[in-house]
Image (cartoon, rainbow, N blue to C red; front, side):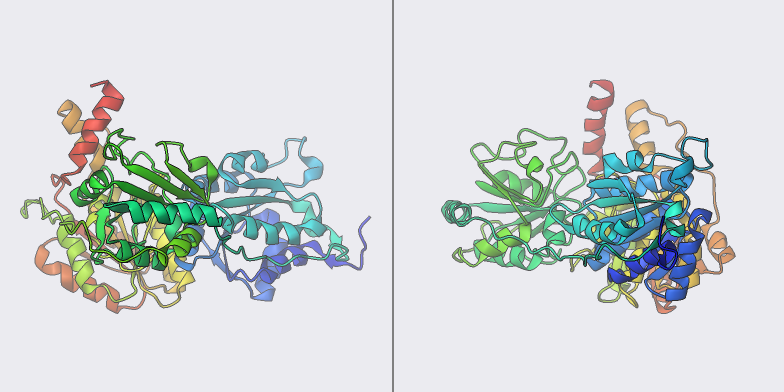
Length: 554
């Protein structure tokens, strides 16, 4: 029996969150954990951000993690439906290597086998998507599970860690017989000397070195080392989609994004190189044009750096595989290579507008205006759809994590809640969330959070009346489309119903003024932008041809 004079479990759990130093918890309150919410409210720390849906809370925590460089913390107060609502956001974090501490309420463990309300096997639910998924067995171990969960989430290849907290722990008491641990910061281990020596020798020997930078460069804080190395080598740097921001888009060595929706300069530079250094990039389907065998030139040496050993040699045979932090390896190498002339000098060009002004705006026009009107330091989050194809090519991204995305999971509804999380992480920094009219509706209820917190988040909805990419694919493959058209929604009126100022934008001459107005408010705003529904991003045609082969065998 617990010591009746000990500390109540609800206070222990709340105190454990406070003591980790986490400054925000994203949550949807549930009745099973009201005692803990009560204690969190009384303590006043960490900050509690009350989302409107658990999926939104998970994306907020992800946006927070991307913008801050620290793990996001998300708490589902409802055991079963709250946890299942959260699962998509956690799966997205796993796919994109985003560090999250995922806490879920669990029912009273004494009654699990009595058809208890809202029961779900949360440990089993999250296990496929988490580095660790466990249930606390006692109150005394909760502080250590939280501290080590944060530590594990940020270590190695970052990702989510899940801890289920049975409801009855709150009614237990603790005499603190288990000394709580503090969260330890991971120190990036320096790579072995001989490995660094070999990489330096290979780089010095190569005539046409190139770099393919992924999200691992950003997450490991390796962007400065990458910039120094490419400047010394005169090497072009291509990025994966999640690697956008690992080098500034205006840097002379930047050749843009590689892949189906990428630039010709990125494809040509990687194809012409005699050594390609892949740093923190998983070489996934989108980046490699569906794992094209001729992605690299004949005889090209491939060097791969990754914190996850399972990524080495997974897709392409490597000549040298290095397991470790991209930042640690790049820092160890950059100062040891000599300076040389830049061998690839072409710069990526941007696709001009493809629209008919009579039907609506071009996405290119909108993004160009955002580049001009956006203040220094502004963050942008992008959802899934036609708009993001243009964003990845055309947005000026001059800082790490300047563009927040769901990359490998392609989860619709990501951009608005991720922008909210980023605004919480970087107080006072404006964030613009871009979404299509198909994806925005998934999480538009989170507009209420932006309003409640008066966050400087501008939601931009590209309205084209369809799930655009699917429509273009269907029409190219069959000459017609089914089930992808969307009925009209007055998004500006919806925003106003949430108490948020909004405007409709329909002609090019209005775009700059609309952005200047929205960004000047200092709080939430929404712009509903009418896009030409017939506008096709030209590189999409390459993807459509690959999709035909995948789906139809031709």
